Image 1 (tube, rainbow, N blue to C red):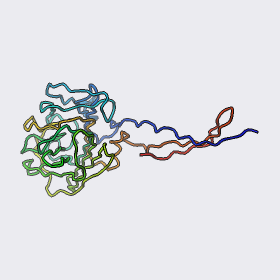
Image 2 (tube, rainbow, N blue to C red):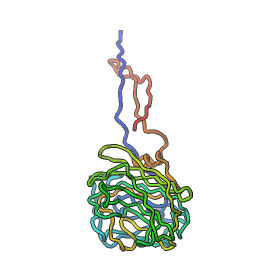
Image 3 (tube, helix red, strand yellow):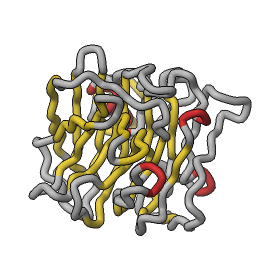
Image 4 (cartoon, one colour):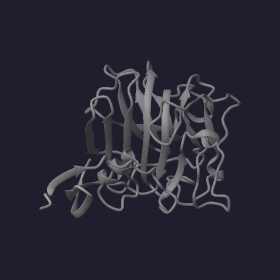
Length: 294
């Protein structure tokens, strides 16, 4: 008589796929940090080539093939000369947040960031900002606070003033990875800064409602890693990976999908649990179930 032994076999968690923003009409810019694509903001909907080369200030970037959060590489910002800028008129999509002043004032920005050091109030990651008195919006790391915090600012009074929203949920420590997701919607003045601490594997966020009416000057240029036209020379110093900009408001679930590398998600990531019968001459699959994993 053959003896059957019932086994439960748990297969390893499958690798997560990379984010795919190409079919999202609300994704207006992406810097992957990958190889030849690094240092470029990709516009999926503006031209036949689907690319916009921001162009850095003649300073080569470092590529690290073993130290990254998405894909296979990341990039590092070492000096104030490592910056990028693009004139408002050259921004591809008409629906780019605040293109030509006060248009499309729904903004979402996500990025993986690891700071080296922060000593001043505004270390700029990405912004639409021409000078200290001409602000559209900006994502910054505040190094004047103790501990350091991520912040999102909007301009008002034709960009002459800034209203700043500070994430108080997560104390930022140098040389640690963080995933930051910021949203701002001008009509409701609602804002969110969601921060994932990769070291502690924790998610925290701050939310609120602003008091000022977003109002920008029409000549605000898009800048990455620095303030407009090198005026302030206070970039974010450190590693970055995958900066992406949307002209709509991401949900917390969508921000988390981007962090996990599964955007847009077709469903929860699952792990199969198999039920088999083991015979002396082989195995027979009886059934299996999938259960979700984080």
